[in-house]
Image (tube, rainbow, N blue to C red; front, side, top):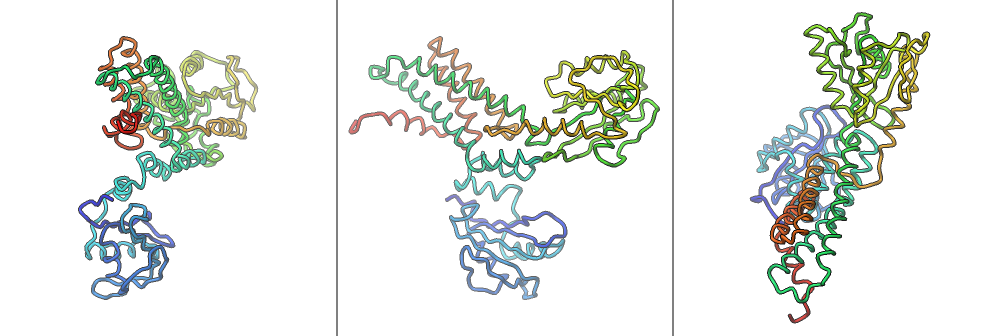
Length: 445
């Protein structure tokens, strides 16, 4: 078990504000002794909830709290941990925390409890990332995905792939450093096949994870169209209150308006943008540039057209703008309660009237969001995605070098791939190669 200078750290674990309870956690060698100073007790039974009166160091009564002592190594951090569960509020937890700091604890830095858990082998990097992402989960699908990561599914995936790469590297380094009489004659073809499979696995998980990032981070939906097609009316209808100003005057919306919205089990970020048109003024043009950026950032685009008017050049520009997007686009024909004059062909068009109901649009969006849920393992952070992309690229380069029999450079690229994969779980150690190299030796050799 690793200790960071035996320092005992403390922090309030609940959000700031008024609530029924507040929680303070301590971790470190002196966590129990420091806690006992505030309770006037001589001991706490491990893993038992104990009701205690809490006093300041000068003997003033502060509160009553449930205290739980987790004796090392059976704790979240692997160190002695004491948890205070006191009454919630702005001041009670702060006053008790200040007493703990005066008694010898140090204020914890952000993420330090999880950092200690990692150093003490209580979790790997994949689980640590899952915990942080779970706190910020934007959908039930995200919670299920992250729960699988906390259970160890992603760690198992990464460790299996890493083990295959280590085995490959061990074989190649053996062939470089030792006589190859005892090596399988088809070794290189076996290595090539294994690496091709690993490359395909990484390419698949990266593609799947990129397409599902909205599940973890929250989907962004951009509403776009020319002026006066009803974009702001759709936003207000979806939110069920008047968030955006509605006017027949073109250019009313000049800045992007963003709001959170629950659609089914998903929390989405919906963005109303300035109408895209020619001959706009300087200020409006800035708003249009924001609209184009919103389209780029969004996971889903609502391309809105006015069904009560004939199509024009600006409608065609909007259609051209969204047609080649590599993302989901809903084509919405608004004002469909009026006489339909719009004759531009729109794929899978949704005919609605924001004035009357957006139920059809909400239903279609919800169905699409639900379809993004996945039982497959996916990566939940940009760091993990980048690590897998880098590993995939290194394996691709290694395959090319293998075909050219450049084994030293091949080994370098495999080493690089292993290090990138290891960023998902735990750092790579060189002795893993040695263990694999000698594991197949005969007994007594």
